[in-house]
Length: 199
Image (cartoon, rainbow, N blue to C red; front, side, top):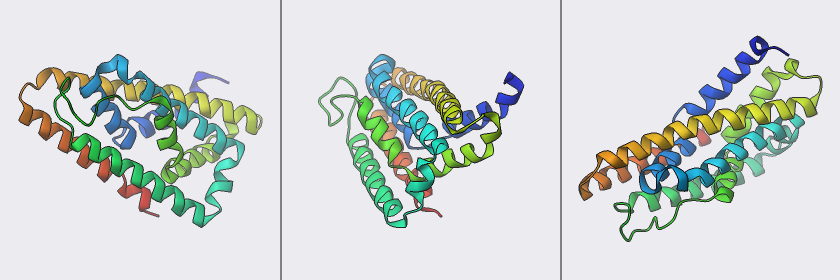
């Protein structure tokens, strides 16, 4: 297996993970409020969640999950409610280092949980498994390849978004600026729910 043969998969995973969505918005918000180091657990949760989802999709679990419409609806409802709750927390939070509703950063398990309740993520990783199946000799090899690629690309992309959040935090000084940023990030998070409900 050469780098040239892996490049399309790497680019697919990079584009899929770097475009704005729920995970990137939360990474930005966490970077702004808690800094890079305290945001590592949630970013690791997102990266592990997406990588494990891609591996499971390649191994066949994704098609089993998506074969049941009732399960898809339940996943959408749970995922949407969780994102709405997080958006409310972000939108109502204040400046960092002040008493606010965002007293501590989101953790590793919450990051994994959020990714695994996203049917759009399952559809995307299943598409990757179908498109790049020829890169591996079998489902287990494909699962490891996709899992590693999506984890690494997600970690890279989320690092950039978290760093952007930290940079924004250094630029903001007034409380109204923080309120505007928090409301903007909350609205982006709510908007990220819409693609989840599109067929």
